[in-house]
Length: 569
Image (cartoon, rainbow, N blue to C red; front, side, top):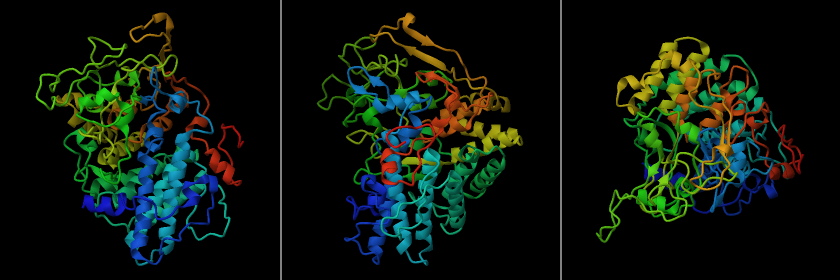
């Protein structure tokens, strides 16, 4: 089934049948006009191609360079791309880490363009799909709602389009966050009974719909500026439906959720499929490792040595938590396979030589947990633990064809636990749910147990600015060290926030979680805490991103989000 789906939907149409200029080329935005000369909108085959393009655009939103995966992780306290001394990188990634990006942030523009590409193809499909094609129509409405959920989460106030049957020269009005939220809730509730409960990999079903609804409800107070508990009550209903009726179970091993092929994984509710022929977009290995580092996996792909863990986050793990080594690699790196000609060097397990002048140790590739700074002077080539959560496949593929889990059962259990804790009832049930998820990652059962007090207490994350400005790989001059002490004791439900990090780092989660969780002074953690080279602030406009400059220039109905200035102000 997976290969059929990937050929028919995910990888369908290697080159576009036509271009939706309104959605993918905002320099020539014509919201009402499509170059549809080469497509027959009465042909079932061509309509299926339109649907395939919608699903492909959703993949691009999340898996592409400068996509949603990067945006949700690289402005957080878990993961970063520093300026690499002697290599480069940095640029916009440094701005993301420091929370000082501006109106021309490329990540925001990519997500905007791809999201409206998905919306456009969904709308065109819905304009021509017969009403009796109930399931097909439900799928397109599901993907459209998913795209609007991502737009709402990142930008709040965005154009709301439900059709491509529009007058020439049409320019949409900018909808409010409330209007976008209400649209998503209405759409998802209307298709819940129509989309079915079948578990076809890469498609939505009732339980995937419930998950989008649960995410919207869970973050309702953030999106709408409200303070009541109605969102938590509604989210609880959705996840209880999944737990009672969905038939999903936790995978035996944490790392099972991040293999190249997760089609048969019992924990996955909805995933973004990729394959080695048509969909190789998730290039995490490219910027997570130096070129020689790929030899630890037998991978022959291209690597450029960029991203790494924030050191303070690595320090939060229990040493007995297998998610530490399932997610990150540090220390001396070793060959995965032996020299093909059978000669002594190298053999599998031998340390990988590294002849640069900034090695740590005996001339071997050795990732140091500590990192000097994000940009002043930056990170040396072997600094920072590297992410290995997603399977790095031998050969030339690396992570590029890995399926991406978008919703999985562990997330359902965490949402239920969070809602119960925020509502102040059945708190032991909440603790039991978190413990159940943790059990597969600890050999000693007692280490997996999380109590109500653990979850409601402060975070163990040692927040504060931590930066060395000394130069030289082995130079950790204490006089150049910038250090502030904030800790995490003042974070409400800080223990739960920690567990969310350990379980979901690298899964489109952390930015959203940091904005939702608050400190005792009322600020959210995203703004109110310092980590590595990012400083705490009282400025809340960082909660959302700027409307991309091109979108502002091509639609005079648009108003920039508060706090962002530039040529289109």
